Image (tube, rainbow, N blue to C red; front, side, top):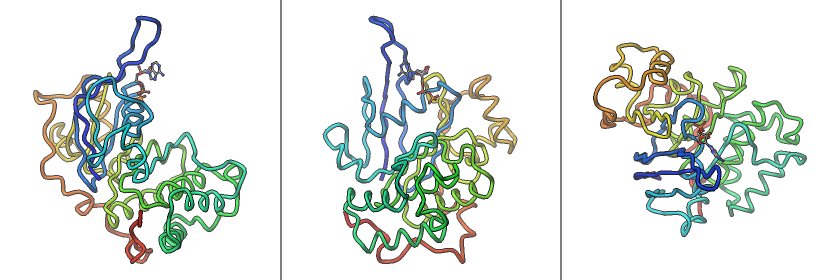
Length: 287
Ligand code: ADP
């Protein structure tokens, strides 16, 4: 599922005639099946952009198209094909076992028994969901809660997944499990992933491409490798720090995104052999 954002601006009204521009004329597109890191300092406009992409906020101007569909008219069609995970918020019912929430999602999204069964097997094999599926989220650790949220957002086989800080506050082992899961879903289902994170190791492990935003304006839209070439270092954290402090070095603001190999060419995409794959006849939604 591709995402096209054209010249989108969003202002918040502070007082009667006082406005704060959160996003200013941003334009980008994300092709089907790509994992893109969406990065920027606090207050840069990331959440505002994600909220517009997920239909929570309406742009003041510009155009957003998700696989050719637009809000508000196609809202239902879009949201059936989109999974959203906010690291700081949960879609799970706090007091009931995770399994019951997943069953609720199954009914809400009209997931067939075959898809449900296949996905539950996958969530168990790669995320270890069976270890805590009988417990309510209020009794879970942060990492367990995040895995349960990922399961809920992927139960209905969305084509696009928005992840906002999915590994924040999570231990290294759980982080690795979550990243492997995201890579496997992307590789085998061709799920498009837009990942907002401050964690450079998430970007290194998952993304071929990055969008960098600051003060509501897009500063960089291109591959991680061209960014490293441009700054002549492999230290992504240093590069990001420099960009936040001094803006993007060089003349061209948009060095281009040609030649992204996508997840198939991702170095981290390998190495899941022996774990459950995502293919199989129940591998796609029947919606
Ligand atoms: P980020 O997610 O990158 O931290 P946000 O999109 O949350 O950035 O915010 C972008 C800008 O918009 C910031 O200056 C922030 O203070 C402002 N902003 C965000 N939400 C609101 C709101 N509801 N009302 C007024 N200003 C807001």
